[in-house]
Amino acid sequence: MSILPGFLLSFAIAIVSYLLNRFIFHSFGSATIAILLGIILGNLYFKQVTLFAGTAWSEKKLLEFSVMFLGATVTFQTIGKLGFSGVGFILIQMISTIIFVLFMGKKLGFSANVSALMASGNAVCGSSAIAAVEPVIGSETSEKRTSIAMVNLMGTILMLSLPFLGTWIFGNNDLLRGALIGGTEQSVGQVVASATMVNPNTTTLATLFKIMRIIMLVFVVLYFGFRSKKQKINEQGPTQIKIKRNSFLPWYVLGFLVLCTLDTLIHFVPEVSATAKFLSGWCETIALAAIGLRLNLVEFIKAGKKLLIYGLSTLVFQVVLALILISLLIK
Image (tube, rainbow, N blue to C red; front, side, top):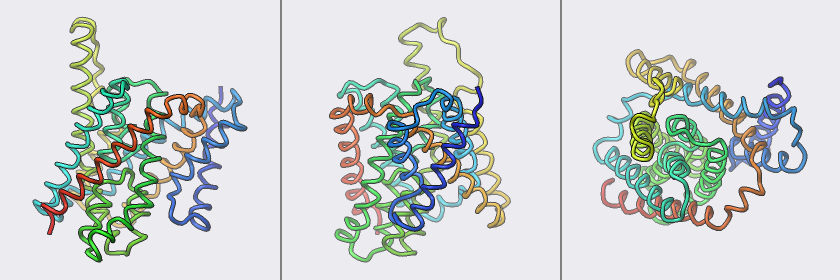
């Protein structure tokens, strides 16, 4: 079956989302609009079987390329720019978020896979982190879609609320507002969109904190890969487990690491980094449109109350912890 119809539909929704973001909904990122449009259109109109192959390809492959291209937009030198207090804040925030989300997922009865995807998506970089962790834990596609939809929903709430919360608590301190936005919000697009509502300096600082989280993606993927392997060995026995050679670091995570390392060592010219950022953003937007088209809203609503509690409790935990850590660690 041809992938063209589903891909073209996803691409068209991405273009519409970009235009809506640019001319009407300035506070929303294109990716957020794309997944919302995809959910609406996919559940109301576009249920044709001929679209399935293309939307499945777009969902999987384009998210993978998005992760890889993201590597050319960050460098390990970000660690030095943040200083010990900034790095300490990000590490404690990320580790605590992962522990909390895994704990809440277990308490609420979600599968280990959903808990891992929610933890990585909220702690690191939204959909890109979920796409990176998904193959190493062997999750179902439906689990990935549910996690991405919830992480993006919570990210949208944070994107619209944190600029006001940060200003209310920290006044006009751009560093502290940037730390709050960059240290908690899920996707790169949401961080930029949110910080832009404050001022350019806050946007720069928030992006630095966000980049530090993105750099940690490789370690998060490795952690969940080893964790998943250990769980399967405990459940099935070591003789029943067959681990693929690339099961801990998928090709696109390796690509991310290589590009990040090259950018650190040789410093890509601005045009290269800008092109990589453009490609990463568009790949993510098209992929999220496809995910929205494939998300069964009836099944999503069935999880309803419990899933919403999961998402909101994670959101509150992240914000409260960030406020405490920023007050203690960052001057």
